[in-house]
Length: 306
Image (tube, rainbow, N blue to C red; front, side, top):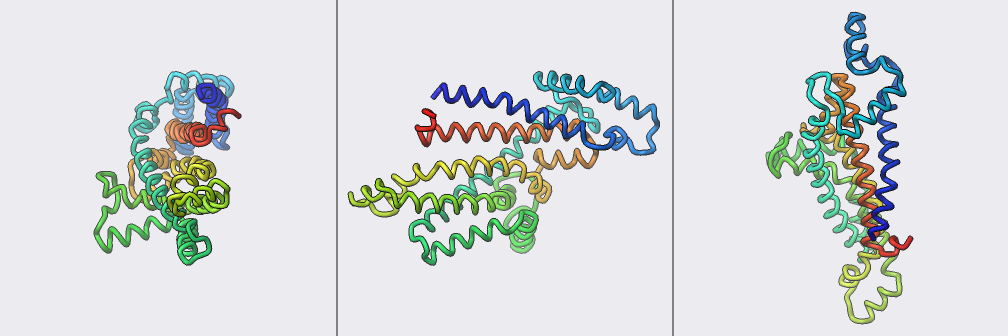
């Protein structure tokens, strides 16, 4: 097990380097002069050259890249042009709110997905199955940009049950978490249903049933773990999508997370802050995939032997 973890962490190093390189290239190789974009077309040439020197953009591109990597290894992401504060501090201040929203959305998705998946797999082709999968298709079909405002109108403006926006207690978390987790729940429910149906056709399930276990008890005790591998794969991919999808949700619900900070940085043309936010999202996605690989080894011991 330790060797498997060590190999996965070792593979993470070039992936993280690639992420950092792509982030640098995305910001520095985009057409147009970022300094002119920040200061405006009518800025004085002396101001343009001064800001370019401050940001290190007057250096050769390869030297800029190595300076960027050396600062990154020290945890230095530069300073925000607008506020002058260290980018790393700004990212660390906002990232917990994004993680809180992603964790809440993941909880909603897992609860809804497992409920729908189990109900649909007990009697495939029944009305319960069709209803559960119909709800799942509806969850995938409705985009966040539509579902979020609809929930706000229904539960905040009409019924007054939940706060409209902002971050506070649990009530503030409900609407953005449901909006963000619904699509993921629909996808995971369909994968879980199919995996459980396939598991029920295996010999070990017939043996469990022949020993007197009911269908639902056999599903819970024997089928879930064997059906978990494809579900974990989808969850790993969708958790990364939760982090990036939170950008839209945070803007809709005025949630003070990293996604909203990045949109504000783009609007103010604060390129060091944009670079720091993109890098944080990208590395988070890489870490989520590492955790997914480790979960494979826990659920399926054969992975450790591969």
